[in-house]
Image 1 (cartoon, rainbow, N blue to C red):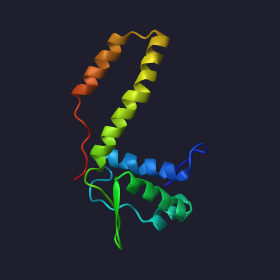
Image 2 (cartoon, helix red, strand yellow):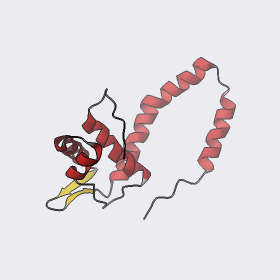
Image 3 (cartoon, helix red, strand yellow):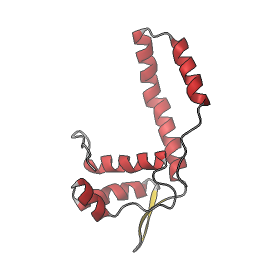
Image 4 (tube, one colour):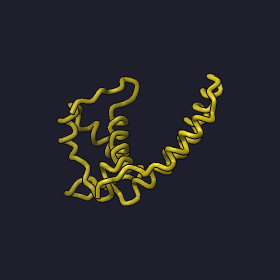
Length: 129
């Protein structure tokens, strides 16, 4: 699997974000095991210490837990916590910028509101069990 690293952010933070996104999308669910440090280091061609740092950061955020001798596992509340945090960040940081951009461009908000209504009626994507 190829991945393009962003030079403006430490690799361990980018790895942490990859895992968080996999939790949010349902690719990783409560109780799932994270890939081993060595496996990820080999797959992404990074230092194992970098991967360990990412896994430790996830543990500090209470998204994963280490089970000695078994590995790192996604915590039961991980997705709920991430959704709450990400929603708050969106409303506080991204939405005001989006509103400002809409206003700056003079976009008619009625079609946007209609598209949001349609989006709100769609069923969320299914996650694996």
